[in-house]
Image 1 (tube, rainbow, N blue to C red):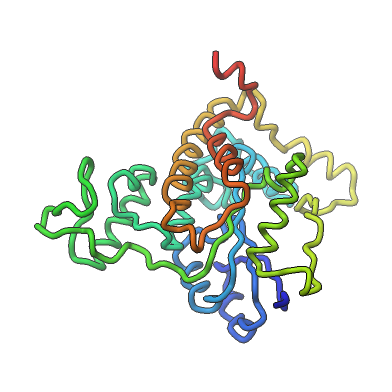
Image 2 (image 1 turned 90 degrees about the vertical axis):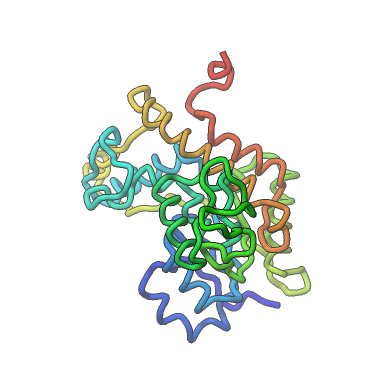
Length: 304
């Protein structure tokens, strides 16, 4: 088996509609989690790329927001101060918002979890809970359990939720989930294992004559030749570890903690072991559990 086509995945782009003629060539789609942040994106993947293997990347919410904000600045966007950033995206934020760190609200569209227990729903933000309940009721004509109820228990209409359709159908695509910290892992043993795991996930072997290239190191954004203009944009960029952003980091830790709990306890549950994969599971878990820890503060200070 050989990789005939490799693509960065932006399934919410209208260009995907024209990709059907290439479906036999597309083998692997590499995404950041925001590439699958709406139901339409997943519907396009299911329709045009049902055999494509997905590789989805995560990043600590604090670093993700800092990087994305500075990326917009580098590309010439006039951004509002980070302190005035709103929860949901609005026009002058150019997709940089706190809700972007709610990774579970993107991954849920893959349909790998049932989204029908009150414990799982509790890890979703309120706007997602509302849409999940509405979708479930439309599909099944019954309501989801409310707080303190469990799946399988009779709902207010006297029916059981146990055998009903989940809010979002399961996509046939397998998913390899990674965290960007794994890409720069200085532990040689883990790094070698990561490369082997990705190679095996893609179904490659040495006999295919396809070797994975070294992991690239690339800083996205426009490359400016004008030093004065570059200095002006650098001055507008944020250093999120500055004390002035302590409240914003605290908010991102709350969001990140819920996202990591959902990913570890539901998306990576044993029932998904046949089509959801990670490399070095214990290390991956350790990284995601760090989403509730401020990376800007030494751990000893946080434990005091």
